[in-house]
Amino acid sequence: MDIDMPGISGIEATAMVKASFPEINIMILTIFEDKNKVFEALCAGATGYMLKKSSAVEIIEAIAELHNGGSPMTGEIARKVFEFFANPILAKNNDYALSSREFDILKCLVEGDSYKMIADTCFISMGTVRFHINNIYKKLHVNSKSEAVIKALKERLVR
Image 1 (tube, helix red, strand yellow):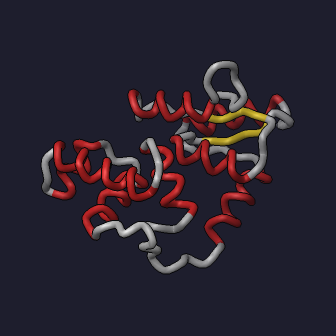
Image 2 (cartoon, rainbow, N blue to C red):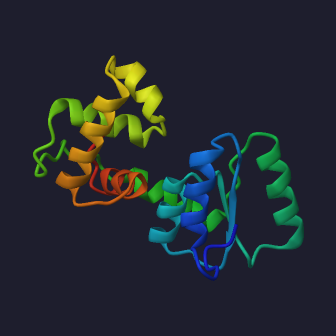
């Protein structure tokens, strides 16, 4: 999947595909190597991230690695991912006045759980999950699951 596509970005398309078909592996193949694009693509569900400047052999090897259960990344991209996680974890930021239950549900969203899985994990109904997620969206000032996950990870709201 490329990032820069007409009509819809590859990141948005990745999130849509993963929402309907979570078992599908998606590798981003793009010219963009800035950390925000990398982060957004991975949060949207991309399983790998390669740059178009990679050789044909590297791209073919990455596809094989993806097929065999790996998460291929060019060295530059892997470095950006490691740098992100090397930063010290901040204390739980509750500037958004999230309840402990909302933190639990946000953590489940970050882990990629479906609403049904969240309901099962938290022993609540699907309606209650939707209620909490709507509150989370309002409190975080976001409009979608992927925006909430990105904000939670960027601001280290969940561990």
